[in-house]
Image (tube, rainbow, N blue to C red; front, side):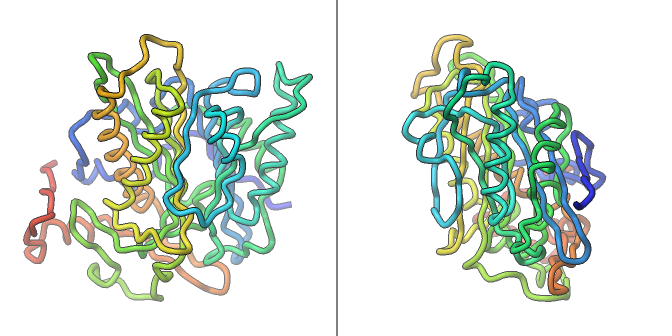
Length: 365
């Protein structure tokens, strides 16, 4: 079996968007600017590499002691349904999340779901459980990884779940993002958070993305391509391919209907980054609330700041997934090039970057 490369909560060595002075939106972030800013939410990765052909893995988003005896309110939205989101029908029907949310490679999703069921049945309180609904999302990492080998197995899933922790979240080429690419560049896992004020109460919303979708990258409203940055190499995958999985967590006391509205905005946010929403793209968002019993329910009329916060956080998380990734050569010798931070800043601030009508200014450091 491949060795486990399990990353719990290590800060990334590459710079994130805010480190470069790229500030998206008006709301403040949580202390870590990550989904783990939401109390009780943990993240675990298992990275599976077997050079040169396997670049894959699994990522677990674990909200506290979630289980079939203690479900959380949740919603899901499908932007384009070309994907294998396991568990979506019951989640839609009942509006509840019974397990952690796992992300992985397309053809490994079914093994991951089976492993998640086994892990859940061993949890305290599940001794007599006869039915539960595993939720597993996926992206196709077949450009860089031998997807047909289905390299993610039960041990990898258990390592991600058992090692999930709070704190900083590793981004880029880790876990389920090890072999993914988006918007012409190598991508992977990205995360961000916001702290909106809803009806006079401050809450936290955090997002995590598995970015693997087509389109033309837009940063602060400006188009950025490998060619515009002077990068050479193989052409990026066609816009007709790719997917994105988005997980949104919040401690706001929302019900399933409201969380579905939140999930919808998360998918809308991909349009800001330049997503093509193509025929072959599986674009999904799952949103859950960790504190449904804490405080009075949030009125629909007060949800505007949360919607805006989620739009901003998803946009930033996608950019973080690109900036944290590294150039990767994989299956068949194919290569996806990382987004170079220095060239990106030059493109956004140099003489050739005269602002257009849709451009947003790059804040000063």
